[in-house]
Image (cartoon, rainbow, N blue to C red):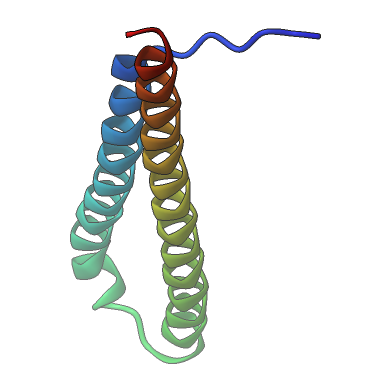
Length: 95
């Protein structure tokens, strides 16, 4: 049977990195919107409508990605707590 080696520091770092990734993604998309807003503001008619439709799709996709990253972060946090609990239980058996 295979072994899993877990370091609690690595799990906690993964939790932090996942949260940072979500924040960075949101920030970059906000920057992009800010950059494009003056350009899009000059558009009229169908081009503007199509842009807004695509922007809504991208916003929805970004929200879904952030939700997934939050779920991953929570799962990693729970794994860290579970492994720490198992470690503490094992120590209690021998100590």
